[in-house]
Image 1 (tube, rainbow, N blue to C red):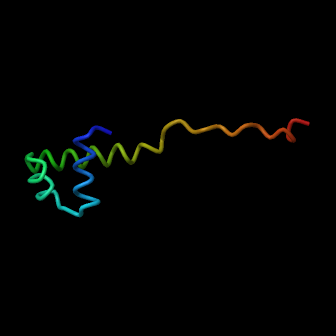
Image 2: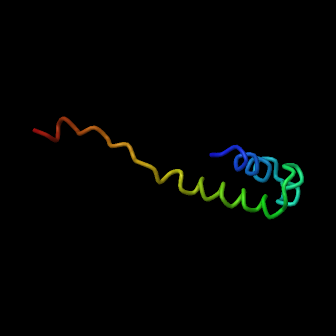
Image 3: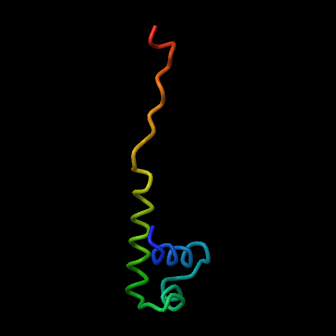
Length: 63
Protein backbone atom coordinates (compact mmCIF):
# COMPACT_ATOMS: atom_id res chain seq x y z
CA UNK A 1 0.00 0.00 0.00
CA UNK A 2 1.39 3.43 -0.87
CA UNK A 3 2.70 5.45 2.07
CA UNK A 4 0.19 8.36 1.71
CA UNK A 5 -2.75 5.96 1.96
CA UNK A 6 -1.19 4.08 4.87
CA UNK A 7 -0.53 7.35 6.73
CA UNK A 8 -4.14 8.48 6.30
CA UNK A 9 -5.48 5.15 7.54
CA UNK A 10 -3.11 5.19 10.49
CA UNK A 11 -4.31 8.61 11.59
CA UNK A 12 -7.99 7.89 11.06
CA UNK A 13 -8.27 4.38 12.46
CA UNK A 14 -5.44 3.79 14.88
CA UNK A 15 -5.18 7.34 16.23
CA UNK A 16 -8.96 7.85 15.92
CA UNK A 17 -8.86 11.19 14.08
CA UNK A 18 -11.69 12.30 11.81
CA UNK A 19 -11.01 13.25 8.21
CA UNK A 20 -10.81 16.97 9.10
CA UNK A 21 -8.03 16.28 11.62
CA UNK A 22 -6.38 13.75 9.30
CA UNK A 23 -6.24 16.35 6.51
CA UNK A 24 -4.73 18.94 8.84
CA UNK A 25 -2.05 16.52 10.10
CA UNK A 26 -1.13 15.45 6.58
CA UNK A 27 -1.21 18.98 5.19
CA UNK A 28 -3.72 18.10 2.47
CA UNK A 29 -7.24 19.22 1.64
CA UNK A 30 -10.19 17.46 3.25
CA UNK A 31 -11.17 16.10 -0.17
CA UNK A 32 -7.71 14.59 -0.56
CA UNK A 33 -7.86 13.06 2.93
CA UNK A 34 -11.23 11.46 2.12
CA UNK A 35 -9.85 10.18 -1.20
CA UNK A 36 -6.84 8.61 0.52
CA UNK A 37 -9.03 6.98 3.15
CA UNK A 38 -11.44 5.63 0.54
CA UNK A 39 -8.65 4.24 -1.65
CA UNK A 40 -6.85 2.75 1.34
CA UNK A 41 -10.00 0.98 2.49
CA UNK A 42 -10.62 -0.31 -1.03
CA UNK A 43 -7.12 -1.78 -1.12
CA UNK A 44 -7.61 -3.42 2.26
CA UNK A 45 -10.97 -4.88 1.27
CA UNK A 46 -9.47 -6.55 -1.80
CA UNK A 47 -6.18 -7.60 -0.20
CA UNK A 48 -7.55 -10.98 0.87
CA UNK A 49 -8.82 -11.74 -2.66
CA UNK A 50 -5.33 -12.58 -3.93
CA UNK A 51 -4.15 -16.02 -4.99
CA UNK A 52 -4.90 -18.71 -2.48
CA UNK A 53 -2.40 -21.31 -1.40
CA UNK A 54 -3.22 -24.80 -2.59
CA UNK A 55 -2.91 -27.54 -0.01
CA UNK A 56 -0.69 -30.47 -0.96
CA UNK A 57 -2.66 -33.58 -1.90
CA UNK A 58 -3.39 -36.12 0.80
CA UNK A 59 -1.07 -39.09 0.14
CA UNK A 60 -3.66 -41.48 1.53
CA UNK A 61 -6.30 -40.29 -0.94
CA UNK A 62 -4.25 -41.46 -3.93
CA UNK A 63 -4.38 -45.17 -2.98
